[in-house]
Amino acid sequence: MTAPVHGIRRWRALAASVVALTVMVLSGCQLDVRVDTVVAEDGSGTVTVAVGLDDDALSRVGDPATMLRVDDLEAAGWTVAFAERDAATGMTVITASKPFADPEQAAVVLGEVTGADGPLREVRLTREASVARNAWTFSGTIDLSEGFAAFSDPDVAAALGGDPLGGNVAAIEAEEGAPAADMVDVTFTVDLPHAEPQSWTPGFADATPTVMTAESSQLLPVPFFGGEGGPSVMGLAAVGGVVVLGVLGLVALRRRFAARR
Image 1 (cartoon, helix red, strand yellow):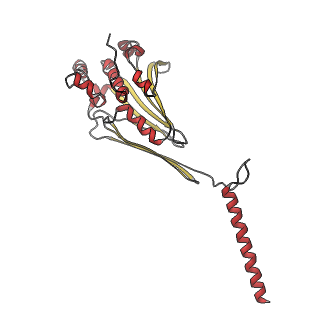
Image 2 (cartoon, one colour; image 1 turned 90 degrees about the vertical axis):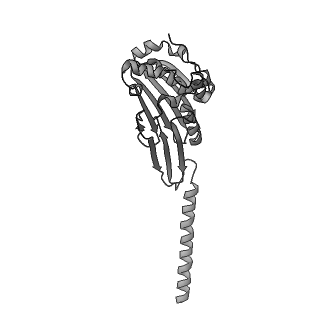
């Protein structure tokens, strides 16, 4: 049985846990890693990281709740759910999710997934609100060219003589006769309001970073009259403008009529 994995640094705990789980089960298995960001109308939302294991992978790991220590994650506001088996796919999914209150906090939460120097970079979520239009924009890059080492904690690498994964990846590649990166699928999805979710599938063999951009907008009806609360400010202003124009028109007509007399 593989020894339990301990989080070293809070902001690296999620990435380190995912990578440690990955190298445990790569041999003969395919691992799916997803990062989903769902944004609500007001700019709040949730980031969810999901790792899917088939039955063979699960038998290698054992009980995920025992193998992965997530105290640091939970202390940092992440909610971890273990061993939720999807009957349709036969995959057991481990998820970690964390809410964010606004676009600025979204970038912070996403940064916790891979760490400040990790492969997820320059993440930005913005929301622009006006009387007639709401707009949301997401941008960022993912660079997996450094392989699994990009996710590892520096302290762990130092403790293992500079190898952040303790030689596990090299051993797996020698056994399987194929790059370990080919055994892992990574999907990053952003779901903005009033738009279809957009997904990117960066690869460890990619020569250049994957650039992610997504945007959506919502046109709002111009509010002339309010509902139960009565006329809106815009409605009153419009009515007032019509009245003023009408009065000015009457004054002009009276002056013109008086001049003709």
